[in-house]
Length: 299
Ligand code: GDP
Image (tube, rainbow, N blue to C red; front, top):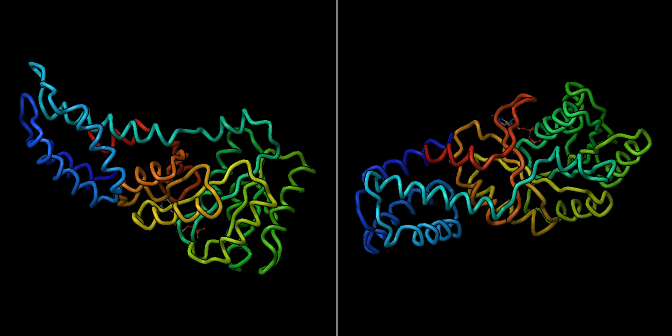
């Protein structure tokens, strides 16, 4: 996971030797570090924040006897990433639903086609079920005929129902139907799938706003593909600007993801990352854990 970033940082840090870091030495080390970070989809904004923390911690700091300079730098980097993720906050969805009085608990899933939105909804429904929560899926992606079939297949694997209408139906009406269905049966949650034909499509954003207006979700979760780097960042800004985002799930973290976009998006939105998708199966969803990320970037 995040091999490129991990190796790059480790190569730079390994060679560092100082007893007390001067400003010039800091700038030299940081310019190399900056390059690696930028190449791995860390935004300039986040690079600046990391720089601030490192600067504050390292300039004038003396390496204690028996310690190594590289350890000191690594600690400062861990601290910087930790602060960035703290600013985004954290949220355990299951605990959040458990403590919420809202029933059914309504979640709208947002994201462009292909990021893994449908798979992620199935994974979340599965996790809810394992934790004793009943749910229904709403197929508010009425734009793609295949979407209805796809979500039905997932639902039958999870063992939950789907509320859908025909291809071309009003997505907000489908969401509303699903909420009524959940209310009448006393279900705990409604998971609403939405269309994602193109995040730049104005009609799509209008459609999503309407779904959100009608469904009044307790949570708007944006699904992003960790492999898409800068694109994930642009999508995050766009969806957040148009509809609002309460939390993010990154998919395909098991692939060759560079990893930087996770920091970039968390920091840009100041919204928690809820889960990471790490495969194509129902169980392949892990709770986002700051320490896990830090361990995986700086080993
Ligand atoms: P949607 O268009 O956003 O609904 O995307 P889908 O749910 O259809 O997923 C698109 C592809 O990504 C499928 O082949 C999924 O199996 C795959 N996928 C989804 N999440 C993950 C993940 O976390 N890891 C991997 N490796 N593949 C994933």
